Length: 306
Ligand code: 13P
Ligand code: SF4
Image: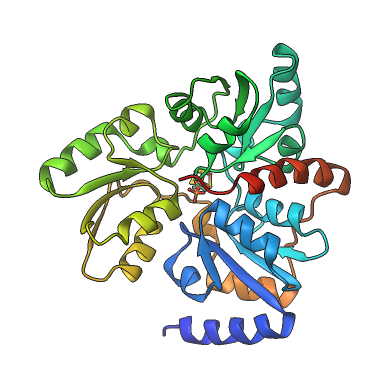
């Protein structure tokens, strides 16, 4: 029996009673995207969290995203329907490791990718997402910048700026599965298709792309009138939204192995359970939050650049 309509009905009812908003990342399962109030990339979701007047934010994404919502909205209850939904890249650097790096490069400002813990954000001058990394780097009045934790995003930005970026060896295991051979093969099969890839991809993959975009950047690109066929170099979950918003167009995932297991931990059952129990909550300790918020606010002031 298909339990989806029943679960959806219960979630909608409870969401209203709790005065909750459901925010979902573009990589979430289709059924989660379909019940969300808003679906977006990391920057969209931070902007939405900052502005919502709901009392409860149900974050359908991974831990650092829920933490960012908590950093921005300390008075709201932030729920992450599965507390194990983490981001391996965010776990590739800790606050003590970043403090050591800062000692190695005294005076160099720190840009941290939003895929990082609140403690790392608290040690940073400004955050960025894949939608504004170049704009954020360019906004800084310094020639040498520490960039953590994504070495590939950092490398991509360094090819677009004259500033020197000191990189950290972090990476996204899901995007690292996308190989140049995947793109070369699909380009032969679909010669008319445009190739879009996420900047978390390896440099040899980025070198083969027509466009390097955040997930919402890809959604916008796909909606263009002159775009009909796209080879999509990012996590598979985005294909649901691309198809839904662009009937008649063709979207080809670059690799069926590009699945983030953490993003897929969020299910309709867990969303319902989370609203029923008002758990698991994500709350950032006030001392860390205040410092991390300064870095997130500076990023929000820069806005979107890609
Ligand atoms: P964006 O949706 O911000 O492009 O981020 C991709 C990602 O990997 C989030 O974890
Ligand atoms: Fe982290 Fe990569 Fe999953 Fe995004 S896709 S949450 S960067 S592991």
